[in-house]
Length: 124
Image (tube, rainbow, N blue to C red; front, side, top):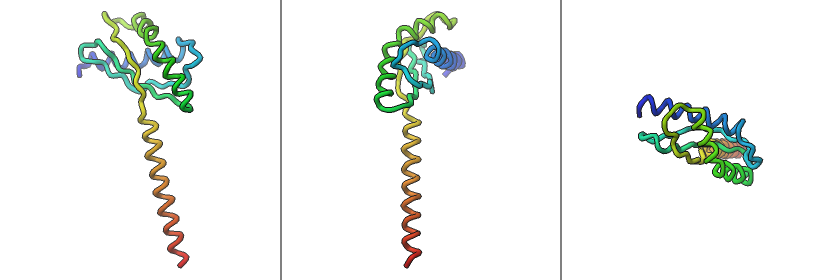
Protein backbone atom coordinates (compact mmCIF):
# COMPACT_ATOMS: atom_id res chain seq x y z
CA UNK A 1 0.00 0.00 0.00
CA UNK A 2 1.27 3.45 -0.84
CA UNK A 3 2.28 6.19 1.55
CA UNK A 4 -0.64 8.34 0.39
CA UNK A 5 -3.20 5.66 1.26
CA UNK A 6 -1.61 5.17 4.69
CA UNK A 7 -1.74 8.92 5.38
CA UNK A 8 -5.38 9.07 4.32
CA UNK A 9 -6.20 6.07 6.55
CA UNK A 10 -4.58 7.77 9.54
CA UNK A 11 -6.32 11.08 8.84
CA UNK A 12 -9.70 9.38 8.47
CA UNK A 13 -9.11 7.54 11.75
CA UNK A 14 -8.33 10.78 13.60
CA UNK A 15 -11.18 12.75 12.02
CA UNK A 16 -13.83 10.06 12.51
CA UNK A 17 -12.74 9.67 16.16
CA UNK A 18 -13.17 13.41 16.65
CA UNK A 19 -16.52 13.49 14.83
CA UNK A 20 -17.87 10.63 16.96
CA UNK A 21 -16.58 12.23 20.17
CA UNK A 22 -17.59 15.83 19.51
CA UNK A 23 -19.91 15.97 16.52
CA UNK A 24 -22.51 13.25 17.02
CA UNK A 25 -25.45 14.12 19.24
CA UNK A 26 -27.13 10.72 18.96
CA UNK A 27 -27.97 9.55 22.50
CA UNK A 28 -27.69 5.90 21.43
CA UNK A 29 -23.94 6.19 20.85
CA UNK A 30 -21.90 5.17 23.86
CA UNK A 31 -18.17 4.64 24.31
CA UNK A 32 -16.62 4.03 20.89
CA UNK A 33 -12.96 3.78 19.88
CA UNK A 34 -11.89 3.84 16.24
CA UNK A 35 -9.19 1.16 16.14
CA UNK A 36 -8.34 0.87 12.46
CA UNK A 37 -9.23 2.21 9.03
CA UNK A 38 -8.70 0.28 5.79
CA UNK A 39 -9.01 2.34 2.63
CA UNK A 40 -9.15 0.59 -0.75
CA UNK A 41 -6.26 1.30 -3.12
CA UNK A 42 -8.59 3.30 -5.42
CA UNK A 43 -9.70 5.40 -2.38
CA UNK A 44 -13.38 4.68 -3.06
CA UNK A 45 -14.23 2.78 0.12
CA UNK A 46 -13.11 2.91 3.71
CA UNK A 47 -13.73 0.23 6.32
CA UNK A 48 -13.74 1.78 9.77
CA UNK A 49 -13.21 -0.69 12.61
CA UNK A 50 -14.60 0.34 15.97
CA UNK A 51 -14.45 -1.10 19.45
CA UNK A 52 -17.63 -0.57 21.46
CA UNK A 53 -17.62 -1.01 25.21
CA UNK A 54 -20.66 -1.87 27.27
CA UNK A 55 -23.38 -4.47 27.57
CA UNK A 56 -24.83 -6.23 24.55
CA UNK A 57 -27.76 -3.77 24.60
CA UNK A 58 -25.38 -0.78 24.70
CA UNK A 59 -23.37 -2.36 21.87
CA UNK A 60 -26.48 -2.79 19.73
CA UNK A 61 -27.71 0.77 20.40
CA UNK A 62 -24.30 2.25 19.62
CA UNK A 63 -23.97 0.10 16.51
CA UNK A 64 -27.37 1.28 15.20
CA UNK A 65 -26.44 4.90 15.96
CA UNK A 66 -23.14 4.62 14.08
CA UNK A 67 -24.71 2.98 11.05
CA UNK A 68 -27.40 5.67 11.01
CA UNK A 69 -24.71 8.40 11.15
CA UNK A 70 -22.59 7.22 8.18
CA UNK A 71 -23.88 9.94 5.85
CA UNK A 72 -23.28 12.70 8.38
CA UNK A 73 -19.80 11.42 9.22
CA UNK A 74 -18.87 11.25 5.53
CA UNK A 75 -20.18 14.78 5.01
CA UNK A 76 -18.06 16.01 7.94
CA UNK A 77 -15.02 14.20 6.53
CA UNK A 78 -15.53 16.04 3.22
CA UNK A 79 -15.41 19.36 5.09
CA UNK A 80 -12.29 18.46 7.07
CA UNK A 81 -10.13 16.62 4.54
CA UNK A 82 -8.37 18.01 1.50
CA UNK A 83 -9.02 15.23 -0.97
CA UNK A 84 -11.05 15.32 -4.15
CA UNK A 85 -13.34 12.40 -3.31
CA UNK A 86 -14.17 11.21 0.17
CA UNK A 87 -14.49 7.41 0.28
CA UNK A 88 -17.76 5.69 1.05
CA UNK A 89 -17.52 4.61 4.68
CA UNK A 90 -18.76 1.51 6.45
CA UNK A 91 -18.35 0.54 10.08
CA UNK A 92 -17.19 -2.89 11.22
CA UNK A 93 -16.92 -4.18 14.79
CA UNK A 94 -13.39 -4.73 16.02
CA UNK A 95 -13.61 -7.79 18.23
CA UNK A 96 -9.92 -8.02 19.16
CA UNK A 97 -10.58 -6.70 22.68
CA UNK A 98 -13.32 -9.27 23.29
CA UNK A 99 -11.13 -11.99 21.81
CA UNK A 100 -8.23 -10.95 24.07
CA UNK A 101 -10.51 -11.01 27.11
CA UNK A 102 -11.76 -14.47 26.10
CA UNK A 103 -8.18 -15.79 25.74
CA UNK A 104 -7.23 -14.27 29.10
CA UNK A 105 -10.24 -15.94 30.70
CA UNK A 106 -9.20 -19.32 29.25
CA UNK A 107 -5.64 -18.87 30.54
CA UNK A 108 -6.97 -17.99 34.00
CA UNK A 109 -9.15 -21.14 34.01
CA UNK A 110 -6.13 -23.28 33.08
CA UNK A 111 -4.08 -21.74 35.89
CA UNK A 112 -6.91 -22.28 38.42
CA UNK A 113 -7.33 -25.88 37.27
CA UNK A 114 -3.59 -26.56 37.53
CA UNK A 115 -3.47 -24.98 41.01
CA UNK A 116 -6.43 -27.08 42.20
CA UNK A 117 -4.79 -30.26 40.89
CA UNK A 118 -1.50 -29.44 42.63
CA UNK A 119 -3.34 -28.63 45.88
CA UNK A 120 -5.22 -31.95 45.70
CA UNK A 121 -2.02 -33.90 45.05
CA UNK A 122 -0.17 -32.40 48.02
CA UNK A 123 -2.74 -33.65 50.58
CA UNK A 124 -2.14 -37.36 49.83
